[in-house]
Length: 325
Image 1 (cartoon, helix red, strand yellow):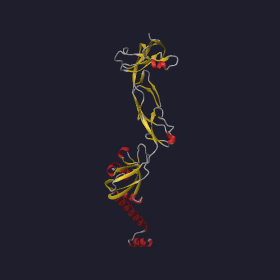
Image 2: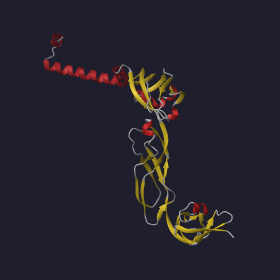
Image 3: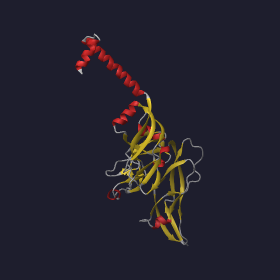
Image 4: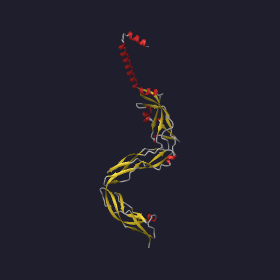
């Protein structure tokens, strides 16, 4: 071959140095031609082997099988060449929303090709235009898995700016998650804690995302939850009220000592009305019956609108029951 090239160069009266330049030019021209042609779009049948993942309650998150899909596509020569190098079949994993998968029976779920258009770039790669699917339906088997639903416990350390407080307790969404694993692991799980939510100097509503604490050997339907809590400025209004017994049965009477209490109302600022009216304090006779030594907690029966929370002083009252006259 070398002798033939040398003979051709000699016939063309090309020296060795000129020959090297010629070969380099030919190589460069071929590279430009190849890149140009590979960048053009062609029509070709492409094939992929799809493994599915999805968050289907009661089932393992990954399918135990792969489902092959074939489609007629318009794509570049680069994609066609790459597919040819890998035997024409891409092995990929696609995450499907549980709502897009249809339940056939038992552990089997399916999705139709018409619903796969939005996932085409994940299956066949970018810069691919689907003309039509040869495969009509993809079937996946998601094995059953031990699971149970448990509440989420928000672990939080919150501090407020002076004269500010929470309007309602910290709320978590969702307030429960599904945990998966072996029965021996699940039996000991009564709740799932969040990682510590730490917020200081609060003077307005807070919200954000909190990760759930990892439990070894257990998978969760979610790894984080949303938290929120409204906050507001408040003023304190002390109200002195009488303490009355409640639920006293006929033929009985209940004496409460002291007979008055100071209720401190925390009200949203600015205060729009007089909250001294309508506050009622009481002790419950049923609680007295089950108490030790006749000591009962004072409680408030109703609070005016605009009151965030309250405290009562004293907290505990001495009670004595007597037969009615």
